[in-house]
Image 1 (tube, one colour):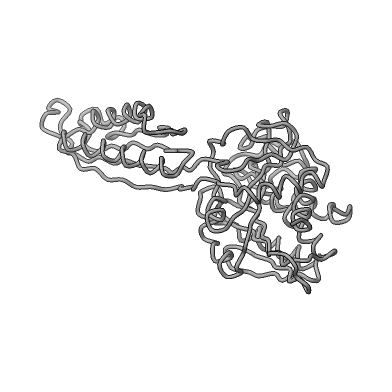
Image 2 (image 1 turned 180 degrees about the vertical axis):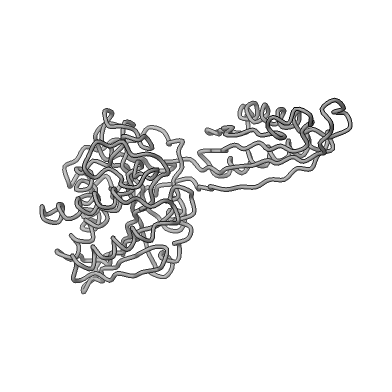
Length: 375
């Protein structure tokens, strides 16, 4: 990556880091991205899709299948304690997952392709709302409208792996969803609880089951059910036996089919427990993420690109438990999601001191460009 382009992209990252936008509130960030690209490119189409932005380089002599690249641009609702001049200027909002770096690296690819061209069409998408799982799914028309044939994307990663570009074939990250089980009975005087229908016993039994069900031999890969909240009745209402309650958990699995099986088993148990205590039960779901599945051939392309750049490559040994909505794109077309790892000494993502290393912007942009120039 040329030094002048690198410096421009680092300035963009720092600006985005200072003014973070939360999921589904990214319009100001998208405006910054479009202004940057309009100022610094001559041969790139820039398309404003409202909630996302996409770009295209149309090769005058395409010889290879087109290729797409994806970056996310939303921040997290937390404090930024990075000791740098570009620390967040907005209290309670911070780029502690590194999406500012993802955006800057994608911009770096666009500037490089604009300067040097390519023998294939290149598409790029800046998507919103990765953190709540709604962003990629809302941008799938980018794939279909442009007849995208393959897609690649990166995530900056602290502490998890040695300094490297890291990924693996097949399942890279788990599928997950937030599950809420609501049970409704009838309140009663605390002195006469038998006159009501209290969901406490049923919900606690379900909470216990959410742990034991994971040992069912039908599950061949990792499955998890992590309780995040259990709420019953009204706090400090000591005169009232509870009549409502809910259990919230994140259910997770390496394989999407096993996630659906886990959900089915939890729902069946909840219905059984509710019926036994004459309770009504309802289920709602949110923050749904597909598994991230890397295509074998596309993963090999990443390995070759990394080697061409002279960077170390690390084979991720097992799928990560965390989820990523890039899986929606990877279900639509073949592709590969990889990590730009900053090493074991770099702070973890989603901590107040995480900052995407500027060096990673250049490293990622170079791998992207090597992919464009490769097979």
